Image (cartoon, rainbow, N blue to C red; front, side, top):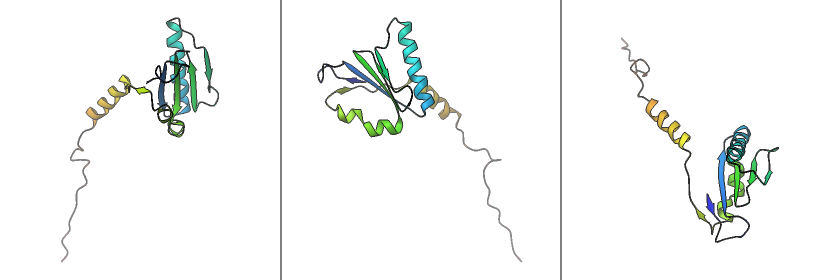
Length: 122
């Protein structure tokens, strides 16, 4: 999240996130629109819902940018708006998934270990 209040008068905050696929870009955008609508807040303007490599949801005071990884690296808004304060927010669901994956990783059992066989030649 970028705090732009001291940098520009066009908006107060950018929320920037990255997705792994165009399907995920759409799912994130749809979830944000549905979640804000359920709170009585409507998106003022949106762009990119057809191409799905960079979706912009403009809520006037907050502008949400949802990028595919490659697009985020290319446009690098953090560099362009480097005077803004940046707060990184981790996705709690992703943190839980990583933690669960780590807990499920076990050392291979004896049956799965490769053993080196030696044979004697006469």
